[in-house]
Image (tube, rainbow, N blue to C red):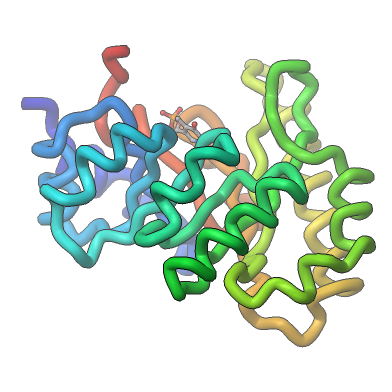
Length: 223
Ligand SMILES: *Cc1c(COP(=O)(O)O)cnc(C)c1O
């Protein structure tokens, strides 16, 4: 079996204090998740609703599941009863549906707003202006079953480290802007979720508080 425990330890040893690790377990089997769990890992990230539905009932109850992928509105109802955080909220429509389904489940679901900063046209997420617009619109203030805890983004999938660093810095500066404008007294708005296997070393130098790491911990995904 792949040495999940050893690779997890290497990652946790290299993270600055205070940076949370989301172990991205999508496409990896339950045994791999259990190996990481036995090392003390509790936050796991998945990006497919059906895969989560299969894994959640057979794994320990104290795992905090983060939904990190693109979430279709019609899937929210399946995960709202148990999901700990939905990291990639990229529309008001999705936010409204989370509010509705979290209310039905009598829970508060923590969310991050996903920014589109990378150059790739394929990436999801809100442009900075669209995010400003969503916050300025203010409907989110009346939502009592979602808590906006910060921002999430993916940098461009390129080798140019300077460009990646610029994208993380743009996200960090934008976080400061919206924190000051909309959440100055809200301690819950504190998360900056950026950094994956290829670029988390850069992300933590640009104010990341939460890294989402799959391949480095669990090995290559077999699709
Ligand atoms: C799959 C995925 C990751 C993890 O990527 P690795 O390169 O395997 O570390 C992080 N974030 C999101 C949104 C993902 O979909």
